[in-house]
Image (tube, rainbow over all chains, first blue to last red; front, side):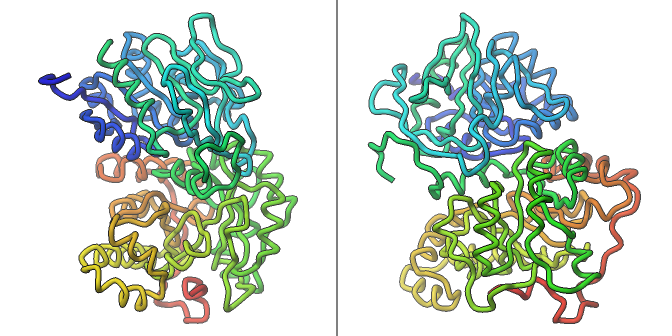
Length: 199
Length: 300
């Protein structure tokens, strides 16, 4: 990477913990920027959709004309990483959404929103993630979604002890049910920056 | 937290504070019925606060204000899939136990209800459910965090539609944080004494320049511009109490406040969001309220 300019990585900044993603990406040398408008999207080499409330991100992205440009960018191969609400936004099929909730799609998966129950069921645990190697990744699940069905081209990256899939990759798209931006373990963001570099 | 732990850990500080992190940039709306909760969710609320009476009605009807009926809270939890918060009285740890048993997502230990204990707040550490607490200044915020609060909201003066107290409280907290960061290390002992806050937290604030938990603002927010004002003053998000459902057109006003909170630094968006909303809640000027009726003076 020496000599190459830092990649411009957008972080969707409509709602949620976008500042945390920006901080992690900047610590890894990326030129991370908040994205709220279609014209800001045009400059990025990759995009993170943060944790937050997926129903609010859906509504605001459609109200402010961002949803269609996002869908077009995903279809044309922009690398996108979604955490929690971001994973929901990237799913082709949504279970337990609010009235009329839509997703951007891209990942050939069905995601169930709030799959674990209320906040009382939010938890932390260690996950073995072969693509990241040792040690296990400490993962924080907050009213988190899970991947219930995945098409043949989707690669599961992590599962819970009960077998439920909580991290996936398909082409240039990456999604996790949990929040690597909250724990100081930067391996998922590094993995995503490598995806951007290879795209 | 043991990093080699392979089982699932519930109710850790990281998980409690983490939900508030996910609410940032959002609007939390007071609702008194399942139908209102539906309107709030459809309008883009990031969470709802389930209660029997909004602060404006508590104010006008008077009497002791308590935790809401469990049936009401359950009907709201059943109606929406965004997080549901509910209020317990200051110091009423049994109301908090009940709310946890009802599986609310957050408890607001709130001065809007009548305090149950004029000395102690709830010890919030033993609970799995996270708590948000009100604060008028940094010392109060740090005392609540020391008791286990996972989120702070500035108090404002609830049920008035007058944003001046909210402005005062968020400005006070932010300027007291800034003042701490400018102090030399040997001045922090006295600073902790003056703030009546634990030294370790004061040291942490002096080093990081921010609270260790999310800071929302509340109390008197009634318009899109009010919400954007709070965001420009440094709030992470806003609570809107009486401001939505005491107005002429709750659906439109709720959606407009959501837009203005995201685009808080764009006057064009705020202007568009402010058009044609009908009447705002009538409101009361805080300066006209006799001191015993000022809710923000409850809690310490």
